[in-house]
Image (spheres, rainbow, N blue to C red):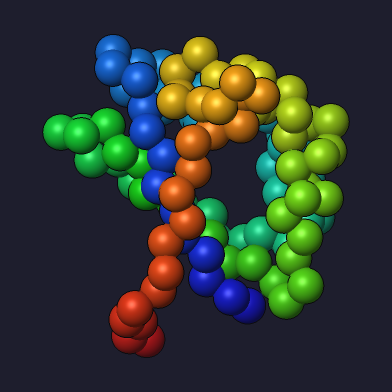
Length: 104
């Protein structure tokens, strides 16, 4: 497994709604995430800056483009576009992070 981390930005005033939507995450999205090879997916929030920090384990050969092209992933992006900072195509303004230290 490989660890992947990235940040996203939440729009002001949407913390509670972001949490609510993830508390009721769609079962078909969870199934797609797991099927794609993503595990141990966590998202943390810095409430002062509205920065979301996500970290996930992905299996070797994980294909981000294939996962993103799945119908349920597209619907989720559209569902979240009103509360996240996004590009015109509704993909989140995601900043990949480089791992510089890890301790097990």
